Every structure is written in structure tokens, then in C-alpha cells.
Length: 177
Image (cartoon, helix red, strand yellow):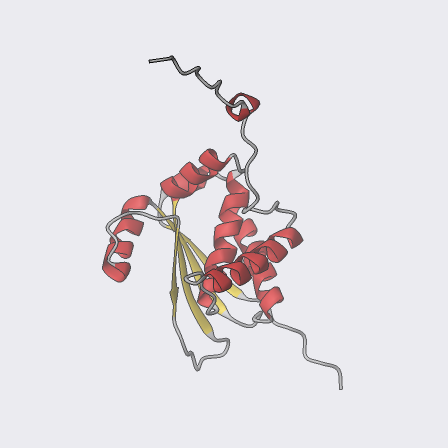
């Protein structure tokens, strides 16, 4: 008897801030990123939501659930044990302003950063964490593998600085006293 076909991960993308509408193709990008992460973890028959919102909404969630009164790029809210079929993993929330600011700061395409954060959030929903150094290395290694499948460069590779910032300042001569 042939094996049953694997079901795709069910993903709902909710756009709660109009700022996200300036970027075409994000829903498809998020579906591809989640599918790649689910495939890497063999969790393809699962359900989750990604909420695209703004920094003020993320700040409120971060304050309520983590006690941190500041926006962040991504928050993950795992459901825990789910008896449903497919199992419900939870929600991933992205804050537009912080995501855009980080992409600009790091010189990354906005879409690449969004895909990375979706993968990062998905791994959190599946129980991965980066509180300890060993766990962080494992999680980053998984992210690199998944993003490579999406043709997205390593997000942890050090960004090249412009040549002008690599020049060492000249040492000033000490004056005799």
C-alpha cells in the first residue's frame, strides 16, 4: 500500500497593519518559508498563523507576555499540546517598523529578513530556543539550512563594512611631557 501523501502546513496570514501592503508577495514568501521549515522538521501536517502588525501592537504583546515594554521583530506564541488534527502550533507576530529597520541596518533585502523571522518563529513554535549557547547554535544551524533551501543567504554571516570604515585610525604620537 502506498504511503499517504504528506499534507501541507496550514498557514493563515493576517495583515493587521497597512504598512505591510507596500511589499508584494509576502504571503507567498511566508508560505514558502513555513513549508521549508515544516519540511525540515517533519511537521508539515500542522496549523499556525502569522500576524503582520506594527510596533505598537507588538509592544503591547511583549509587555503583556514577556514583561518587556518595547517592540521587537518577532514574537512566537506556541499553543503547546494540541489534540486537534492537524495539530495547532500557535501564532507568530511580526512588527513592521522593527523588521524594516533591522533589514535596512543589516543591508538585507526586506523579504529575506521577513522569511528568516518566519523560520525563526516557526522553530520557536516547535520548541526550539536560544537561551543557552548550545541551543542557540542548534537553532541558528537549522535556520541556515532552511534558508539555504529558499536561496536566502546566511543571516548570521557578518555584514561587510564599507571600506572607509575598515581603515584603522592613525595612532597619534605621544608628546613628551
